[in-house]
Length: 284
Image 1 (cartoon, rainbow, N blue to C red):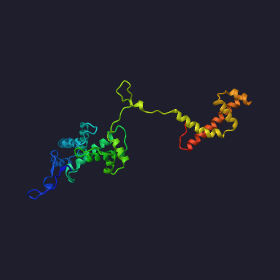
Image 2 (image 1 turned 90 degrees about the horizontal axis):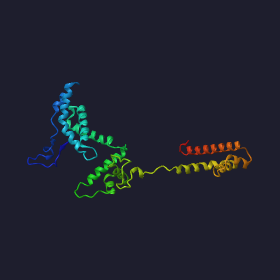
Image 3 (image 1 turned 60 degrees about the vertical axis):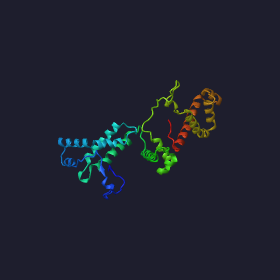
Image 4 (image 1 turned 90 degrees about the vertical axis):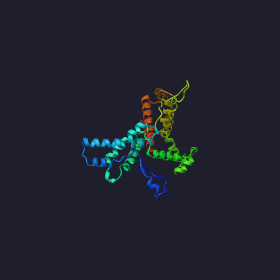
């Protein structure tokens, strides 16, 4: 509930300031009578007009709550619209028999604004756990730098203050200013030899796949009969034609072709079988 609660010190009359000094904000109008009427009205033009009157009366409070979240990467106008939406929800759901409207509206509007930051402000979907770490780190930084001239708290100080590990604090720090993303086309150098963020990213190296394929084929090649291994060596390492291989071994070219096809299929099937057994999907 948004009330000012000064330190409880008795005044001249002996009354505690914690009680006597309690007051409502200027933007919290007395509208209980209007809410009583609203609760008894059916849907229709009269109810809509009364609802609009209540929204207008409480809109300054919604704007004040929205102002608490300024300078967090969202425009104040957009925040006010989100807060106004929360206000409308609070008015529609409020039961005047259960207490003051302000006590119900403040957490409803605040929650709507926080949900806006949680669900709409991230350019990429960030895990809820990281968002929670970000909020804890942000609050801790504010608390540790309340005194004028306080230095920026270290990772260790933040971890001690929040009860988090340093790795968790580091993750929260990285998420503090991560509502928006940087385009891959963004220029990282202002000179003539300027380059973009995309130019700094690595690319997949096909040579790694070649190494994996060779290692996968080794076992199958060792299991082939000696003649099949010799034929594959002559064909793929010495670049001999099937006719030359046939002449060298004294067999027909057709027989050489069948042996090459059969040997390659056997090695391939064994290599793919080992990859599947090891958790790697086969590549066709």
